[in-house]
Every structure is written in structure tokens, then in C-alpha cells.
Length: 495
Image 1 (tube, rainbow, N blue to C red):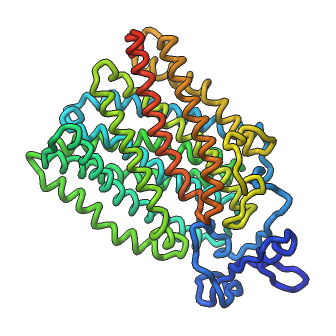
Image 2 (image 1 turned 45 degrees about the horizontal axis):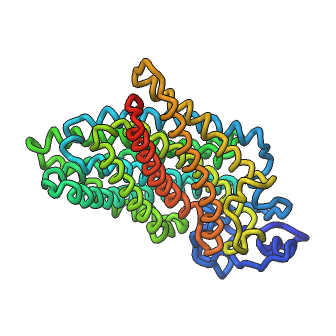
Image 3 (image 1 turned 90 degrees about the vertical axis):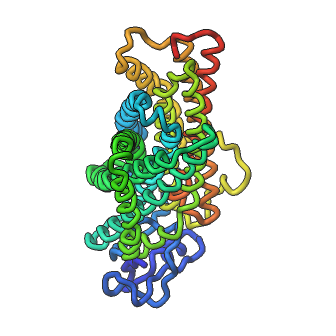
């Protein structure tokens, strides 16, 4: 554990913090055989847990006393409401444009023969995009907490851990994409009553290869983005997660469409190529395990954090089933453009709030310890009432929904080449669905993050998968309801 000089004595930071704040003393001293700078190791080191920082500053020999002047709602120091708004607004708009392009791309590729012939591919889209978004946003959130929690001096140790966590993400992307294929196949078989074997091969090959490539590309980009934003004085909690999700959706969807087209074109001529592609990605799994095991913190991720991502994948697959059933109705086919927008924006906004609250808890409270007003039953809507920065951020995020969705809705309509604007009924119903979705997600996020921390779970690893999956399901269900209402009232020009 990190120590600080005080009156020629070296005391653990948590001991000094406990003496000043009256909190329980938590022993986090490393063992003598740990691989950290000389002079830091001491005999008793507990195992790393999910509540440790992704980049534990204990490994880098840096003294960082726990500050007691801030509250959990204040988050990282030197952040004003104005700077928070700017830092949220810019990536929000950029990420929103990413969801718009993803929606337009999905409208195009759904007419391809491979998507028309294999209905399970359309069911796979929300599940795969949600899974990839969960992995990227979880990594971004944990990195954001890490860079806000301390300074890194040992470059070698830092990069060893970063590479380890990228390896964990590649492992998760490969295995979970295989699970997504299974779920999509089951739902597709349930819907159509049959599923050709070659369609299963196409589905698995396209899903595993696209997930593998997207995870590798975006993981490297996100590491650079998080550390770059901190270097230039921005709070990555406000910026990293939306950027991770939205442009990840566009990248993943483009790769899925390309890989699906390639697999569909070669399944009869060169079927062995499809088997080799999937087998190559699966054979790299032991390599990712070995790389991730090189650092204790990344090694801990090999055993934890799977449950929320798997459950989120199942929830997103249900949303995909709803989307496929809605699109199959010619009267409601127009929903395909707007689904990535409402789902992406909802997930982006709630991930920012979740990451901010999690960072505040990491900085100011021990695992299991929560603010006084969270120790009993409370109104989740109270997140919108208060003077703390996290209360302000919730208000800003909710206020951004209507103007942001208006921009994205009309941008999508113009990019399609439409000469008329969406009808008033479509606009009003779409905005109402978006507000209901984001309001509900922000309330759930405040309750979920504090509950997870109280139970000793790291919200950076657990909350975002649940929240984004819930956002996908809620957004798809609300959007389907909107289009059904528009069809019932006869507003067919909007559809």
C-alpha cells in the first residue's frame, strides 16, 4: 500500500485517513513478494477485489492521501457546472451523430440478402451492439475512475495493466459473441420454426470475427482517449463512456455487415474459410488468459464481472427479438432507423452518470460504506433535486434529451434524403419516449450504483452493463409502442 512521510514515519494512507475521519482502518498493505517498487512491500497483502481501482496507485509508489474535504457528490476536484456541461455536450453530440449513422447503416444493410434470409442476424444486432458497448464503456469507466483516483509514475506497470485489461476485453468479446450467436439462433429458430446449419455457420463466423476486430480496434482507441482527455485537463467520466458506446456501435455494425456479406458469399464455395476464421479467434482465448494473468488487477477480472455482461446480453437479445418482430411488419419497418438513436443516446447519458457516481464513491468511501442519505429507503427521483455536482449532472443529462434528440431526429431525416420533416406526432411521441427512457434510467442508476457499492461490488464493472441493456430493452419497447400508436391514428407518413 502507498505510504506517506509524516514526522519521519511511514504510515499507510488509509490509516492516516482513518485517524482524521474516524473511519474504520482498512489494511491494504502489499505482501513481501509483490512486484512493486522497493520499500513499498510489507508482509500482509489482501487479494485484489472488484472494488479496487483498475490501476491501483499502490503499484506505482505514489503517496496520495485521502482527501476528506470533498463529498461523494463533488467527484474530481476543480470541476465547475459550466465545464461539466461543455465536457458532456461535445462528446454527446459527436456520439449522437455516431448513432444516427449507425441507424442509417442498419436501414441499408437490412435489405441485403443475408439479412433478409437469416432473420437471426437482425436479432443479433442489438445484442452484439449492446455487448460491445458494455465492454467498452466498462473499460472506459474503470479507466476514468483510475486516472481520477491517482497519478501514475511507473510507466512499465501502467502499460502492463492496460495490456492485461485489453486482453481481458478480447477474451470477453470472443466468448460473449459466441453466446450471442447461440441466443440469436435460439430466438431465430423460435421465430421461424427452423434454422439451416449453414445459416448458423454464417452467424457464428460473422459475429465472432466482427466482435474480435471491433474490440481490438476500439479498445486501443479508448485507452488513448481516456488518458489523453485527462492529460488535457478534462474529466474522462464526462467524455469517455459516450464516445466508447456510439462510435463503437457504428464500427461494430459496419464490421458485422461486412463479415456477414463475406460469409454469405463464400459459404458454398469456401466453407472451410468460415470455420478457420471462427477457430482462429477461439484459439487465441488461451493467449488472452496468459496475458491478463501477468498483473493481479487484470487477473482478478478473469474471475469477476462476467455475470452482469451475460445477463445484459440476454436482456439485449430480448430487445432484439422485439425489434425483429416489429420490423417484420411492413407498416412499422421505419422503426429500424430510430432504434439505434434512442438506444444509443439513452445508454450514453446514463453511463456518464453511473461513471461519475462510481468515481465519487471510489474517492470518498470504503467498499460497503455509502453516504448517510443512502443508508435507508429513499426516493430514487431525488437524484434530480440537490446542489451536488452529481445532482447537477443528472439535471443536465435530462435537459439534454429533448434538444439532442431533436438534432439527431432531424439529422437522420435529412441524411435519408427526405424532402419533408418528420410529422409533429412522430416528433412529439419520439421525444416523450426518450424522456421517459432517460428519466427512468437515471433514477435506476442512482439506486443501482449505491446498492452495488454497499454490497462490495465495483459499480464500474457491474452497473453499466445492466443499465445499457435496460436502456436497449426500454428504448426498443417504447419506440415500438410509438410506431404502433402512429399506425393506429393513421399517421402513416411518419412510418
